[in-house]
Structures are given as structure tokens and as C-alpha cells.
Length: 157
Image 1 (spheres, rainbow, N blue to C red):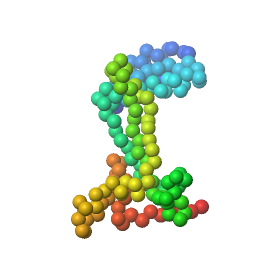
Image 2 (tube, rainbow, N blue to C red):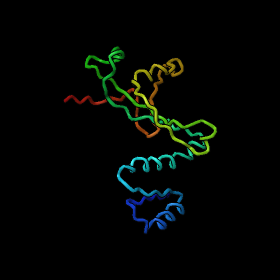
Image 3 (tube, one colour):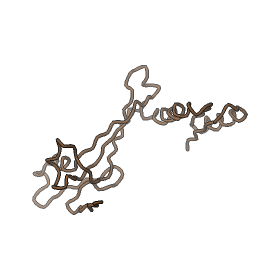
């Protein structure tokens, strides 16, 4: 367990205890003087949490569960007559790769895109499945993306 502590306000009476608690548990301590400093100080937590992944060059790719959404006009050829398709989102972190910042482990942000499940199915080599074979896909979180027996419910408002 990592403990991240923060002290709100200018009072420093408990700062030493909070700093010790965070440092003894591989955490991070910060003091937030004003409400304007909240966002900047909270972002420091992200840098501390992402540091091991940046240093080890771990780029975890995360897929969401399948959901029904509309596509952009240029992708309407994928859609059924209601304009809705089964979609998933893929995202991964973006880290600084500059030599001077690599040891500090700086997270630059997250990149992601929506992918129609039909496009994923096009990448499956059907000739390798065999005559009675089928393909299915499960995300790294255990959600089913596609399966021959998957029948998503369409909710219309």
C-alpha cells in the first residue's frame, strides 16, 4: 500500500507527521496553500504513480467493453440502418522518452481511439480458423468484445 498525503492550508503543524507517513510508505506528500494550487499538486501524484511504468517502459494497452455508439459520417458505411455500431475504445499512456527525463518518469498524457468491432473482425485470418472454428475476443479486463453468440441489446430512447 502506498500512502499519499496532502495538507490543505498554510498551517504547518502536522506537516512533519504527514511527510513521514507518506515517505515511510512509498507515497508522496504535498501542501496545498490555496484552492488555485489544487490541480497542480494533484497532478504530482500522477507523476509519482506513473514513474515506475515510465522507467520500466511498460505501456499497458487498455480496451473497454463493447458498447453501441454512432460513427462519424465518413464511417457510416460500417453502420446498420440506425447508424449504430458495436464499438470499443483502446487507450494507452504516453511517456516522455527523452534521456534527461526518462529517469524522472514523466507521464505526458493518454492517447485513445474508438474502434468499430467490425474492423477488428476483419483482421482475423478466417482460413486459419478451419471449417468449424470461430474467433472471439476478450479484453484485458475480461469483457467480451466479440463472440458469434454475442447479441447486444439495443436501447432506444
